[in-house]
Image (cartoon, rainbow, N blue to C red; front, side, top):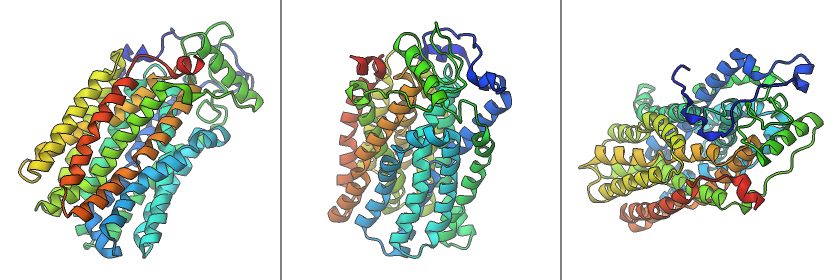
Length: 464
């Protein structure tokens, strides 16, 4: 990882502390910092996991018309189908921290990848809409817990490189999203035109992603499996190892409490995260960007197809929107960690969203490629939100709670969006009202994004 630089140390304000002997060392287990192979395996696991967090959604978006015809769905039911990701992420995402404390993050992510593989393999052959929805929910459950735990794993293993590793993760996520959108239609044609096999094939990619997490889940005693049990902590200085990026004061106490809790089996006292205005702003920002993302993934290809664009080209346009996240998902987190306030980035992304929706309203086919690019830039609010999760908390425990709160609350907020778009489309007979709705949501997204981007931490706000 020679491209990693030191500018991301903005996420922690104290220099590295030399580790002292801990209980993990006393039992013959070496800290993660000395086990390079585990670190490399974590990176591989993060990348493969990220590749699998969106194909379940974008592959369906590319074949939504065929799925609707095959299962006899109305526009409203299809809107419900595009809302299922947000519902599952909200319901199952909140379970991730508790599961991670009990089984370890690696084991939970491993199980999540298995759930994705099983759900994607089953849902095309379920035979009816209900079965399709249930199997989709299984896959989305795996995505939900992995969504929440990725920022936690990044913060614990790479506390001084949050921007770089979040960028790498977000790039892989965007790449998987774009590839699924681009190749699902042609791959379906090569498989005989059967949409069922065109969707089922993505289960294979999820099965591959299980492999790196198996040894990590079995590596008991490491920070990845046992929370913070082996984190280097000093009794007189703040923690600075993979378990924490704390600075001083309350952060040190929190990190030390996490270590004691891990060794005694007791859970540390949680933050009162709902007292933090920044946590609420970040949750609403996450919810609004998720609304835009899932409307895009679920309906954008259909918007272009209804405007006269061929199915293959519509899939490519959706892929262009998604692939914009590959370079920008690496650049934006690194830029965000250099800035004391991430509000300017929020504003730029919001303005791109306005321009993209405006073009989609006025000339959906004529400027299709330009609108796809602009909306792709706007959708990069996702890696920015993930980066801010890591920056707005000073401790590993704080990141766990903030990630779970922001994502679970955010996905709850995003549930009505795709469903409402489907209802408006069916009852208005066109895309004018749905597009106007999405453009209007850019306003509150910018406002709360600016608030979430202020230089402060949830630990400080919760304490006050």
